[in-house]
Length: 395
Image (tube, rainbow, N blue to C red; front, side):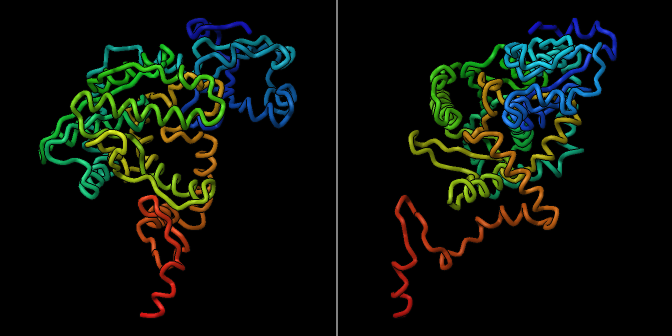
């Protein structure tokens, strides 16, 4: 399919073209180009055994034939490779060069007001979003003892909204000087698309985050893995981060998982893994002696992170993986966006009847009654209720 650049698109008359976003719902939730029509290409293709039926069943119907159709995906690869039989008949069709990431890069290219944007982002954390963001961040750090005297913390930045906000919150709490600790803002490039890496660097510069970047070949290593590549990628990334952080003299790495990640993980474990477990606020590393993993956004709601992002007109990556256009977007724990999105929708549906469902899910792993559990594991050893059942009766 023919490609068109953003510059060429801007020169076209308003109303002469229609933008069509063919990414999945999980990706679109992070933002769309204004005015675009959403079409889940993979879903429509699977449901209709070929996408042409989808184009004629109301999605394209009603668009005048003289309109140019400009398709975009995440980085431009998928739309560029669309075949003629995949496209609606009778229209002049184009692929947007660079896709959604290219559009976002164009928004962040202006460096003239970076200082003002940094000040606004920091001011909003101190004032407008202090209760929603800084307070739960500080509470988690205190409740779970995430920051301790003499710590050297590697704040791991993936390029998404969560890790970028976490970096700003760390900068803010350090100003309070309640304990002495050092920060290193660590970015690993596992083989990013150049536009993805440039976007991370641009956002870090805009927000005043002095990042340290190191490179690895993780994406190449999992390129041909068919079974659970996202899980393997996540495990490898964490290992590389531990290793580099330790080389830099750090004793902790901080990841940007938030409250919603926690409750979704609890529910997914039950529904898909047949187990009750949670995403812990901190963990000792089993492979890197003396290292810990901490999650300072543990009590911060995702909706509040999004509100801060949108208030400051910031645009972040959802996933910087170079598989982004060819597979479901992975999450930092290796789960796919489709499974996590399904769980998000389930929780939202339950919340309509029970407004406390989210806090109940979270608190459920704080209120485990082992007397009512048939079997559980502790330090890798299984314990069955029958092991002590008769002993209780004797007492």
